[in-house]
Image (cartoon, rainbow, N blue to C red; front, side):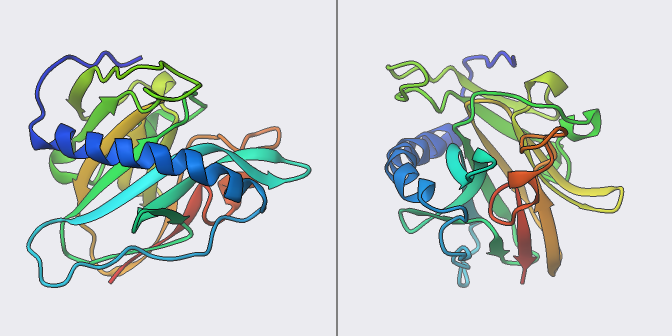
Amino acid sequence: MIKLQNKSVGNIIVTVIVVLIAAGGLATGLFASHLSSNTPVEQTQGNLSTGSSAPFQLVLVITTNNFYNASVGYQPAYFVLQNGTLQSSANITIPANQKVELTVINYDNGNGTVSPIYANVTGTINGKETIINNTNVNSTNGNSQINVNGGAVVSSVPVNNIAHTFTIQNGSNIILNIPVVPSSVVQATFELSPGVYTWQCEVSCGSGPTGWGGAMEAPGWMTGTLTAD
């Protein structure tokens, strides 16, 4: 596991912890509604900023106990945190040629099999991401008390300590890759040219003998479309 040292990362930690606390309650409350369907909630996109010089805020939440179907069972899924609710990640829209501050709140405390090429942070500002743990501070699956151990700014993550990735690539060219460690909050800033991109988790965390079935191939679960407009 990554050892996160107790060092200040300024306003980033404060901002992410506030988002984390809010999202923690939302994720718990919305599990039940998601379990009743084999598709995510209605597909929506984030709100585009209007004339602001501040980075566009995109918050994604990864949850685990999402009912896929009777044969597959439960699968992990990415959601967009928007207007106080978890929305589908099948179609995400961001502004093109503008800095996007991405926060990934991961409630999955396990890891998976992934190629070493996805251990590196790619396509972010300065090739870095900030990792803060622990998202499961108030979860029945984790510690029952607040236990945030600090933040670390990294350019790569040990391959055996990756739960999911948020990856965009064109053939063998990796445009954006953000590795997400178990039970963590990850924050990174990036910018994309206009276009329609496919995002994909590159950790085999789905169903079937290879782990690439189920959520891995279903839009709004571990893959989807990201439009920079």
